[in-house]
Amino acid sequence: MSATERPGEAQRLVVCITGASGSIYARRLLQLLAAARAGTGPGAPARPGLRVDVVASHNAPQVWAQELGEPMPADFGGPSPDLGVRRWDRMDFRAPFASGSNAPDAVIAMPCSMSTLARVANGGGTDLIARACEVALKERRPLILVVRETPLSLVHLRNMVAATEAGAIVLPAVPSFYGHVTTLEQAVDTVVVRALDRAGLRLPLIERWGDDP
Image 1: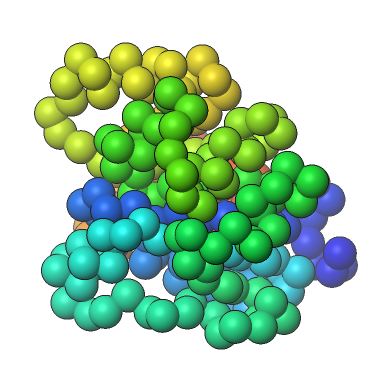
Image 2: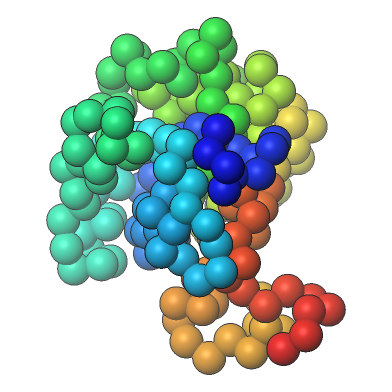
């Protein structure tokens, strides 16, 4: 562990990008994690030991391109694990986090579709996203589901209850506005930073309730 990293802080994160609307959250999450590794974020030391694994669902790249006007990167950090960020094919079960013997510190599904939520709630699915979520639950690691849907049906609500009872954290993609939010990026950050809080990586990026402005 680097001298700049805090004991107990998350070092290995898995980011699951599903086909729900909200690709801007996933892109910003990966930008902040890259900044955290390099120490280029405001008021935060470098975390060179931070490792991020990324897996996208079948239709996530299509939503990413439609919403952000750019293709989803083929690899967010290059093929070498030494670069700290690696994208895995959704059917590549050679990924270390596919096994509980090498479980990550936390898994973040951002954005989390209602179909992904249903698979978490009911233990189904055959791809690497479903397996990453299953490993997090069975190994008692934080699983943060940044759900993005409105309005919510009774099926959605029941699945949220079931996922919560199984140990997941349901964190809706709902920005907060008490921190003098004036831009879209700041609003997005209020969601992304809260998800990272629950994953065990606290970044001093947003104004928190009770902090001096």
